[in-house]
Image 1 (cartoon, each protein chain N blue to C red):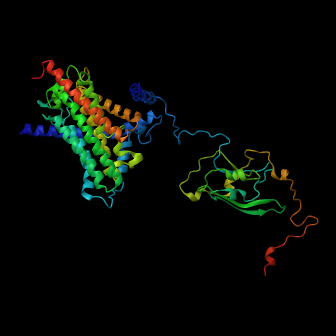
Image 2: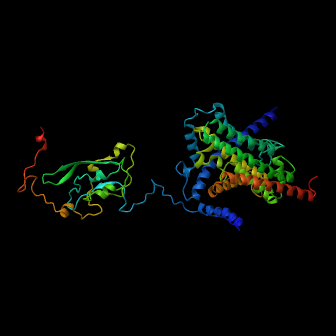
Image 3: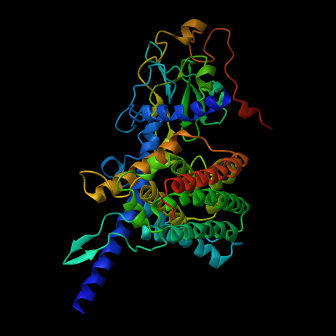
Length: 176
Length: 333
């Protein structure tokens, strides 16, 4: 009968709440208790190095293009041997939404997400991290990956110094 | 002369004690409610201020006192300022007729352990609980906000309908005790509390008391998901605090009234009367909180249908049946 079902449905929850009153809370009291995130946890970004210990980042700007909140900015530069690197590299963690699109976009696995999640700060300006703050001394999630070995670009001589190569043109000199 | 002074002093001390105990109880009831609700949902509840959150009421008080006392531009100023006081004071005053212990002998004088043993104590309580509707109604109307007004309208409808069932459920108690004084009613339950003699009246009164104190499952006047906060939407700071604390004082007072009317008041074996009284009141408060942690809110039409189609006829039937049995037993003259 419906009536008895209703009575039962009204009284049974009281037993449930009473039982739960004596169960242990599942809350983690954060500053005192911290849970260890899994090693592949996706929190703040790092810049990794290749197996030779060189910076992986080639300053291709793909991460900053992929970033939906435009929090990554950098300046590309080229070394004497032709290898590209970022002159400066900046992530504004006050804007970052930890979506991971930059790590997905990176062709050299340079920018990766790390399990470090505690970066709260009282001043948003302290959340603007420079390249020195972001660089780490390991290869991250794929330590053996070496971009230049795969792509096979061997830049032995400085630009313009290879045989059959014209010296680079300084475009500024062509201005009227 | 000296005697008179002593009596006056004792009365003042008694009043001060009752006020302090009542306000402290209300403040800690807030904490208890938050803690118990949290534990029922497997959370900790407030546990930062003091030992295990014991100083939380104090922190809340400081917070409320330092908040801006906001007056909406379209509010009716005087009524807006008056309403929270009305809500808190009516709740406080209702405790005056509740006996919490038998009279004690102090300095050769008999000191009744009740603020004022009125011979129409129950009527006084009903008068005040009707006045409490004014606090809500004026607060909601004077705010000049539609949420407040809707909340106040709901509160008025709810409180007036359930007051009827409440009043009708008490008449059997008065018939059995043959007195309107709460002291006499408590003494009439020396052998058996009225909750066992007349469980129907107890049930109706308890449900109506829940509705009167605007608590879940009858918390429509402040339905957060529809009305922001109901009649106290526009209130801030300590004025909101008065509404809030009034609600919890009301909880204590209703617990005390239920205790006195149905559970034998301060009577009980072994333990001192005052322990029995506060034990019963606190148990009832726990039951109030338990109900809040368990039951969902009713719809407004369900609330009205339940009040008018079930509680009031049941209370009337119970009244007739109790009167008939009392006549049959030859008790009533």
